[in-house]
Length: 395
Image 1 (cartoon, rainbow, N blue to C red):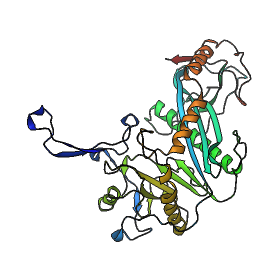
Image 2 (image 1 turned 180 degrees about the vertical axis):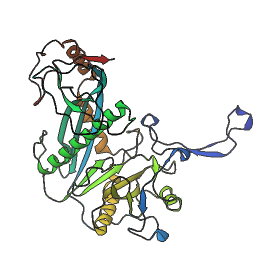
Image 3 (image 1 turned 90 degrees about the vertical axis):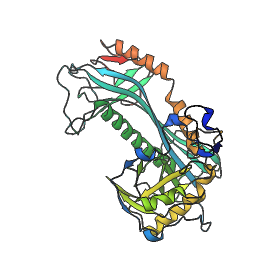
Image 4 (image 1 turned 90 degrees about the horizontal axis):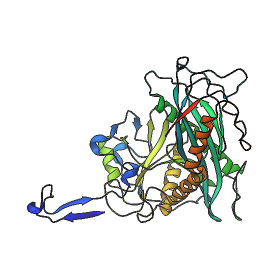
């Protein structure tokens, strides 16, 4: 939204000068900023190869190209996570015979004997929405619950509301805060479930959702759009990473200026970027009202191993297929970047996570019953009672 301020100097302290024009970012500030302020953008250490599609000296905005076929189906992949409780795992070791997930090999130091350690009980889910001739419909939804702990003896927790599988987290870098390591481990597990969901959607293997008539699983005539970076998912064929917000500048200043000048539907030329992993990328402006310089701008990425001709085809395809799903401000507080299929998928997955109050109460009950196995309904496969482990749940 753009407007003018005609208030005079006497309108009060802090009044803007007459005739000043300003823009309001439509992105809901409770989600952070769609673009960090200029002085707050991190300076990326990524290596950039700008001459992939056009020489850097000839960079220009690229208009959509209507030539070529469109995919029969678009598969939108996303995941959600929620911490149900922070818990404290008692330092006493498990009694003989108790079971839990084996800790992975790593260099992280184990907590001292008898020391209670912070842990997270979390629910996370991933799913896929397919947009095809049968309409937009959910094809896969995968739900997991886990206990993330640095304690070597942490074991699976069973509650009346479900089981939490123990995941042992090794802190590999000195001075890394425990909670950060736990959160990163949770995010990594979520990314794994997103890959499982994507594979299931394409092969209809283990799908937990019945698809409507007209939906065709499998084949090679689809396009996968993953909400977020494509890291650890580059092996997925015909896949794009979709990044809605921007926290670092990757392009040199003379090329970065082009991004703010893109018209709706236009994109930058493709460039290659390398950090701890390599990928091809480009910026695209979605349709929407004029406003802040980067309003409606998203960054798309695909695997670095793809031939340049295929990368350019994917970039052109992104211009043709993503704009129709751009959200409107009155429907979505993260418009237009939060695409309708992704927003709907997030709502459905959060619903499937369950009632947080119920899950929290169930954890409190399980924490009190640490003198013996908990009698509960049939647990998820692989879950074991939290016998021999004392959990202090922080409210």
